[in-house]
Length: 231
Ligand code: MN
Image 1 (cartoon, rainbow, N blue to C red):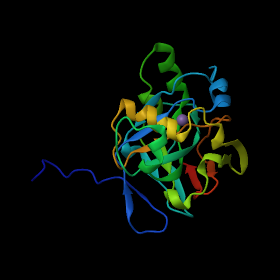
Image 2 (image 1 turned 180 degrees about the vertical axis):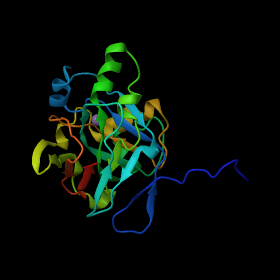
Image 3 (image 1 turned 90 degrees about the horizontal axis):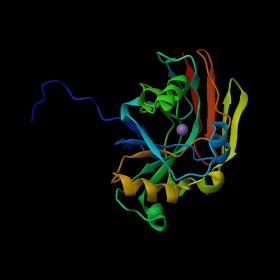
Image 4 (image 1 turned 45 degrees about the vertical axis):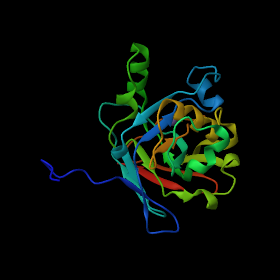
């Protein structure tokens, strides 16, 4: 096999406790999955789950104990942070039932669903796709993956984000409108999940802007936290 140019390298995320890395297939994201965040965005919080995607190469992979960096993106004046629990799929499948979801999960990580909010809002107003607001380059910082067995009771984990040491977001994974198992059931009815898929499960309330020079530090209890500077 030869290619007309060198193919891009496989995007991968480190896994705690092993030198082997998690090769990324797709990035799915759940919209408005915490009630108080849905309300701050002007919605009731009571709606079926919906999904959007980011390109796999939008990841900014941050190693344990390191500070990652992302450039302040083009075209926006309102870059928002969204701290999220990320589910890493180890075994694919379609029409997965919530009761069977756990066996498809390899592990969990802490991620940031960075959002060009002004562009997303304009697209919403015009009824156009969110890609330019959500799927831009470097829009998906992620920390190392903790294998599921080592992650503790992730369904009851605290989730938080600080910017320059000040708290911006704090909630609990138990407040997800659609929990992890239900999210996998809905998502796998629409797409056949593959090993290597990542699912950003949604952000709690408190989303707000960051500017160049800010440092974000976020976590989910039981997982390796993430620190990212905006350059
Ligand atoms: Mn989000």
